[in-house]
Image 1 (cartoon, rainbow, N blue to C red):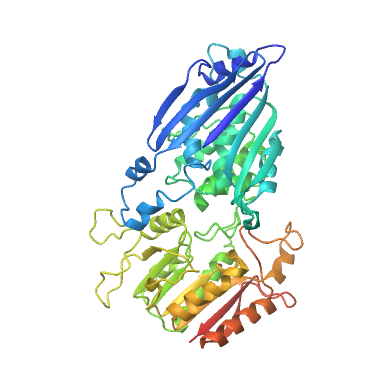
Image 2: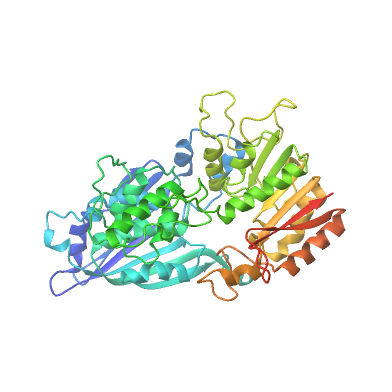
Amino acid sequence: MLLTITTTATPEAPATDLGFLLQKHPDRAQSFEQSFGTAHVFYPEATEERCTAALLLEVDPQALLRTRTSVSTPDFALAQYVNDRPFATSSLFTVALGRVFRSALKGDCRARPELVTTPLPLELRLPAVPCRAGADKARALFEPLGWRVTAEPVPLDPGLPDWGDSHYLSLTLTGEQVLSEALSHLYVLLPAMDGNKHYWVDRTEIDKLLRAGGLRVTDPEAETTEEDPDTEAGSRWLARHPERAWITRRYLNRRATYVRTALARLAEADDVAEDEGVDDPSLEEAPVVTPEGEERPPSLAEQRAGAVLAVLRAEGVSSVLDLGCGSGALLTKLVADPTLERVTGVDVDTVSLQMAHRRTCRGCAPGNRRHRNLFADAEGTREKGTRPPRPDLLVGSAVYRDARFAGHDAIVLMEVVEHLDPARLPALEETVFASARPRIVVVTTPNAEYNVHYEGLADGAFRHADHRFEWNRAEFTLWADGVAERNGYTVRYLPVGPEDPTTGSPTQMGVFTR
């Protein structure tokens, strides 16, 4: 992971004054040990006309693995080595940034205090930034802050151009900025673009976000951690940002209670509606109550999960596999259902499984003998007929046959198929309907016809940046009927969410019965 910060001389000061602000001498290369690797600071060039400082983070996968205490299976150990952490500018990098440049983030420069509030001609370069929302979102995040943004997608393989682009961007930011604010922009926006943090998000993250966003935190109960940069730039840039709701949700890992608290405090700083950006389907916790005491209707995500549960109960299933379970939104409801004797969650993303583990294992002491590992073994050890205290969580893919998927009464694919390239749908069909062959398969997917009801969604645009397609009702019916006929199933269709007489419901559901 690499960041370079370049500045040029101004009439008031030489470019090497950058060293005073960063409190790192241009003539020295320095290393700073982190719990997950080593951060290096050095200057590739340092003249009075032009000066560049580089922050290079080398991630040690073994050191990162040693910080984990609750998981130890071979699947998870392998995931520590086969991932993007050695090069992608993720939350690991922002933690190192906050520690190594802590004084610069706070705007502390005793040797040259006049430099702290002086805008400098800056160029920030990051060769690999994860951003599934794409280059347009990167520009929407940085341009309102005064940056000129160059965001170029990184190809999956330069030697195989037909593979297309990855979800990483080569990002260059140029503009005249106060250095402390420039670093605070990176500290907040990089993890928001990534959307995942390598550590557990608790309420202290709210204060870290607000401080880095330029607000002075005066909460007497506020706590700090060693990862908190304690910035107090006072610019209130986050409160004034047009994407503040999106940034807050992503930075706080969509923890609904924390998001609402942070947005309310940002609203106080910039006189905006407190609930702006709060009513989001991804915030799946208790129903929101309006100031008048009226309960808001359940979100589409809650209606979708409720519809899936209703189908499973009506079909009398006793074991369910949630394929593509993500962070566990449906799993938390499945494990609470006393009619289910066996619940399994499967996802290809280990970070999502970690979140699912935390959501479904609340209140289960790690030392308890019944406390389950994050990734269950292929062969279960549970006594037949006993209900598990927690679900089995497996690393796996919907497009690869897996013996562990067999033996369940039902498989649920809730908002999964649209994340696959159309060319992979036959593989999914083979995995679920031909190989695992449960008695019941439940598939939900967005109804593209309903998208006209979403304000701000352009014609032909998808609801989510990672969607590869979105079917209308006829297209979904054509695919589902073909799958059912080829594999010995019947299928019926149910609407989910408010139904419009012209466009149908926002979510369409297919229930396959073998």
